[in-house]
Image (cartoon, rainbow, N blue to C red; front, side, top):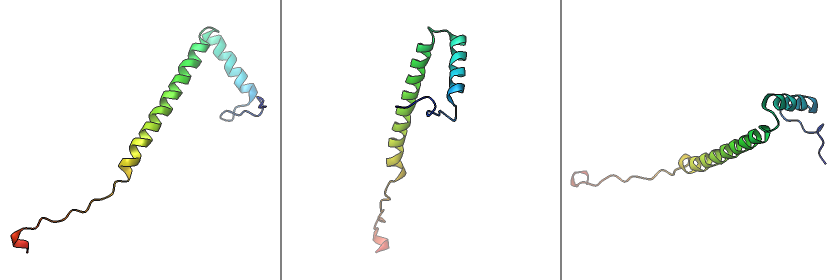
Length: 78
């Protein structure tokens, strides 16, 4: 079981996280926090989706094989 003391989000300890949550609660109120969390979750989900799509599009374009082009034979070049 993971406790708050072992969770370090960006180097923040449990005391700092509690202070941040209390400030958010005071600023936005209890009714807005679930909406803010939902919006943040959707934003992160959309960001991951678009970055994954960008990676998939970049892979085929990054490694195209060069096609050999044969010169056109003209009567003068024989």
